[in-house]
Length: 156
Image (cartoon, rainbow, N blue to C red; front, side):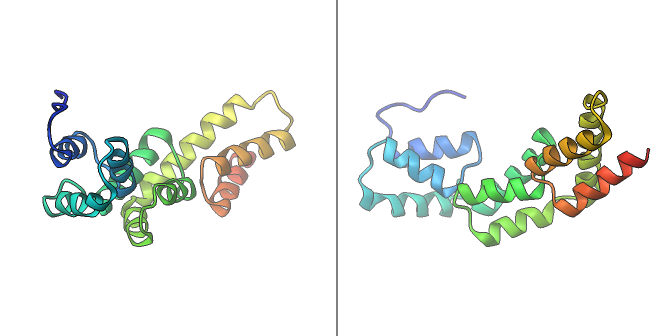
């Protein structure tokens, strides 16, 4: 995508910024600060971006959650925390997490666990179990789901 001209208005530069990739409000406000746009203009520019559908926090949250689940194999807890760090509203976070397909999510948890399990074959069963559980918890999967998968792999 071609770069926006340096002499373009802040609104035009931000339209380009938002059209290139989905953004959350905090990212847009950070970009406004970097462009040294006066603070009193920030709300008006953000409102214009929302009105023209360049900026939609719910759309951002849904895309973010789906992509982190599929590409990085993150669990719900890690996705939720990352969205909170981006200052996304609780409503948008709930909508994004609700949209994740449970069967796909369970499959990602299972595949991630199996892949890690194979890499831990040289460990004793106790260490193997604990390292696997800690890994899955760090990836953001819920504790009850993690221990179910670990128990299943221990039996096999």
